[in-house]
Length: 444
Image 1 (cartoon, one colour):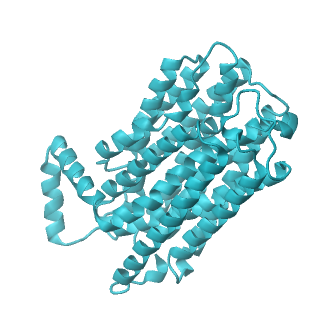
Image 2: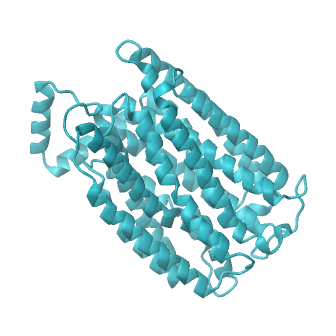
Image 3: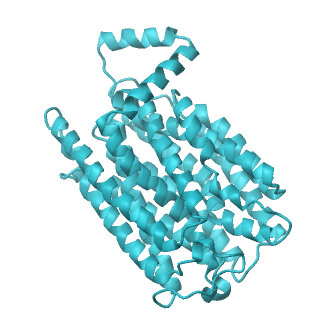
């Protein structure tokens, strides 16, 4: 197998492994609040779980990002999945919060390793393509689990213990399959890796680094992350990243809950949660595939894709504002009978799900691409900071989503989305000026 083919193979395996693992994770996230509301109708009271499920992530994002390969994080991630799934099978409030911390720690490890793996298997000509391929495969996870939810929960207003056990046992097995796939990733050949300098000075540096103690590497990486946090480019990209954290919480947790709370949707309200997840996945897959295929012929860089993403999201937010009752995110277990500005339509709700997924793919594929390009020589700290900021904002969004009416939540995302887009443009224009002096910017 040629070096280029081996790198592409690694990207595909990485994407497929994430697809299996996040079939479990994202399906769980999409139905968690609905399941917990069903539990709250019994003697269980632990809905705060979904509000804090990412808190552990942003602590460990700064501490656990010096990994040479993706396999370093997969074992930790699997154990967290098992803890989470079995605790949901026999739910107790303390176990939900404990599982949240484990998942947060594991996510920090895994996502940072993913960014490093994506970078070392790419160069300046393939980083855009590989980001699109990975994102399309990853977001295929939204399709399979939610397809089952749509058919299995159709016509149900309450989620029984049997339904809950069946779903989460299946998700646990699926996450195990994804973990095993990580062992198929191969070490890429050393030449032509993005950010790798073949000079003798860098080779000497690698020898010196290998001689350092593990603690020394960790301290050095931590210092690099702190310095990286205050650079102009990372501060600007942090605004964009913050927006992705807010909208991630919205489409993965809040919007499905809103759909499930609208009593005017009738007996289909619970199954519509699965259908919403499917169409979010279709949007994500379409966006990742399209931008991956077009990256080689994109003469305008990343800005048009991000502009498309924010326009798509603004349209989605406006339609959701008109179509959903304002109290849907904070409705009780019985749901809400409040009226929206227009007659609530299932078709419009599902179309908005597609728009949310498409817009999210626009932002995330381009953020992965620009981070892998700008910080190619030391990608792990950059991706750790990225996940750190995203997770903080996701946690904040989970917190306020339990108190703010829908239109206020949409307003927060509109403000962050606008300024996040402007800040991304600034970084991309600066990157274009730098790259124009040394390489072909059209292929990034």
